Length: 359
Image (cartoon, rainbow, N blue to C red):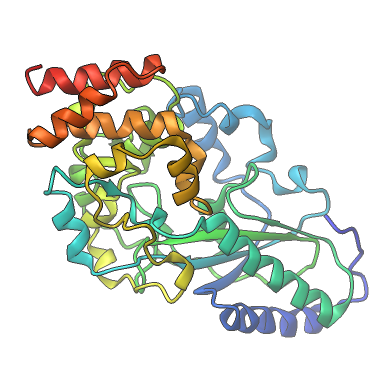
């Protein structure tokens, strides 16, 4: 954090600054900005219980930093406020995503990953916002985060009043559902905080019922080890055999719980050009994507969040989807072409896929 005291700023100054921060955020293209304090003591027990049950799977980083995740002042000394921001990402007509999930020969990529890597896009906007604040008032302490450190982004956004935590564990808002990214500015400025909003899930269990792998084991509790987003992105080894048929044609992430949520009927199409689909990923065939060489994978997905999983996991995921797809000569031929791949992981999942087609 850029260390700087704030004794010269009184309540009136900070109230005016908070109003301007939100206006500047809007001018930078952020969907909404709100402010909360750094006390997450109410959220900490739930995090610790989740970790103790092992529901985070291989995501060791979730437990690696001790209490820093739930205590912002321990992560960045001097933090007293968090500026929480939302950036909408939904890129296309609602029905297109639902239709694609029924077309087994095509690949389904979670809609958030169709365009440019959100870490870069949102971080740039938040950095610009912090610099605008600095230009207004001089040096102060801050640090920008976008899914890049032990930060409880949903708990912070909920506390700031950006929305409430839905039963699928994501943040929900009445005006935009859950189809947005979250990012934060940790700061030592004593800004006035915003009020939390009430929850509006009621008795609805649509997200729980819609999960293909029953990963939402209870309202507000996710078993990451069963979640398709975890299996296709975070898990490095074999995808459990019993879960493979449930992945369908989803090769990177999953949107089913969000597609089922009634509040997402109000989701807004993104105004951010960087989030529009690239490389035809919104409707590409499995056979086409499976044919990419590693060099082609790296080139085509430059600037994409997908590139983070690496080429081997990419082939693994597509092989599973091809095992679930309708059989065709082109599909079987593509699988056979990878049957002797140098990677044990790829060979294992290709063999499984071929067996699903009776070969």
